[in-house]
Image 1: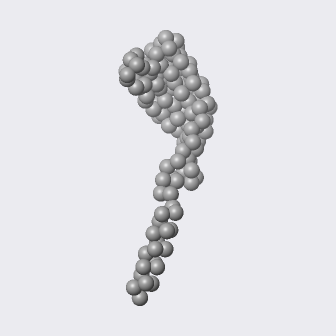
Image 2: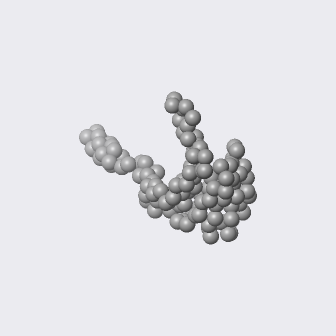
Image 3: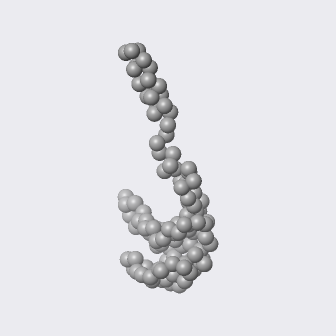
Length: 123
């Protein structure tokens, strides 16, 4: 009886050890577009994210700021994430004014806002 319990514990251990619990969290990102601001301080990156196990496909847009110091890391802020793959047109009106256009924005309630010194307009 004791050996039967050990056998089941061993089998359970093997099954658990063979599973990768983080499979659901694996995502692949594909950069679609990257646009620098006129002064070169900021970059907007549009990318498509596909996650394993059928958890979804998304369009992400993030803003990065180039580091002014060798020792500091780059600033990064996600501006928006949208379900599905969508085209997004990025236009820097000036070094501090960013305009983003996409058919995906039509049914969304998106408010124009300011992030630091950057004014963001959705169309």
